[in-house]
Image (cartoon, rainbow, N blue to C red; front, side):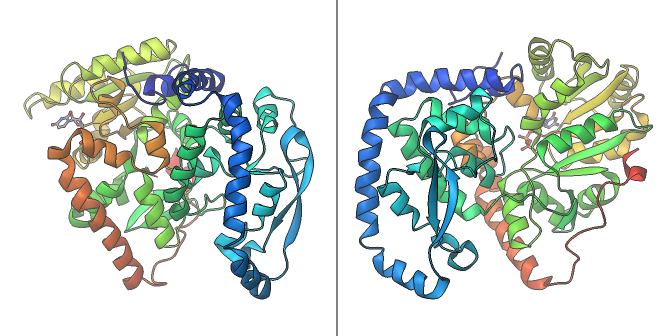
Length: 463
Ligand code: UDP
């Protein structure tokens, strides 16, 4: 069983995958924590005074900037928005294309007028949302804001569960500590750049062909692939994998030629995409994908084989699956510390298990090369995925970074904190090296490589 002290535990996130369930658990936990700081109703009163004071204090010194922006970026624009109690108001802004980060400076006037707040759900445009669902209605209980959890999650590329959920979560329980935390988390988010919708389906990053999919799309494709006629190989690639592939030709070839699908994992890949002008749609990592995939494969009769990690760990993951996704068939488990002599027996065990989905957790590059070498010996396995440390998280062996750190794109820092001796090189040296490589690539490959690699998924490749 997982036991985490996170703001939202992995169990909560990955448990019965119902958005309402997750929402409720988050609210309950936050309520307990935040009640110690300031009751939400008290904070809502104090918040207005804080907004007023802060907006007034910022407005005075920003008047010269206002004048400059007015001169160079045109007049202040008014856009009709829906605010608190679903009432419409005019939001003030400069032309975002010309004023860029300063375009929302005039919103200080909306804050002074009591129409907006510094922190709160995004102000919607009329007709954009129908407030017929509870989660949608909740957002109109509070003033809309400049910064919100959804804005942060999208920029950190982890906006998997939709805006309504993030906003309802905020509106249910606004607190001083929560608002300060959102403002602080917005700082790194500002550097990560906007979330992108329209992206090429396939991009090349540092010579690695990446399938540029959102989480839900990746899950859909994987479910489809479980019906293919041969074993499809799937790999996750993060900054560390990219570093390895930079030096290890065999691993790079595995990603380029053997893998049928390569998914971009982590904030490093998003930053690389920004720098190389190949925007990455979403952080599609195994740990967030796994429970979603289990939810889709439940009651389909498609079995799961868990291969890898220390003895006992794969069994613990199987127990997690049985508990949280009882309709998911477990075809077999096997630890990842077997000798070369034992390998044929392991392959036989997988081939005779009847599994459709195989997760291999040996760490990169070994897991991906192992799949490439053995995918023709895996019997009925249709999808084989290299999943790194995933089993350690779901077995409770290792704790996953809390959501607020993931929202800041700092999951790696938490892993480093837990295992400094093993991971300092990977993250302290590796992250810097990765960014340097990306920048160097940008300088040396200016316009050299096409942005999009064909049309992405084709039927021949899929099935
Ligand atoms: N592992 C394994 N056999 C080995 C070496 C490692 O099964 O010979 C497992 C290890 O126990 C761990 C996973 O491979 O569960 C690698 O985890 P790591 O944190 O390095 O992966 P990452 O997610 O960082 O790629």
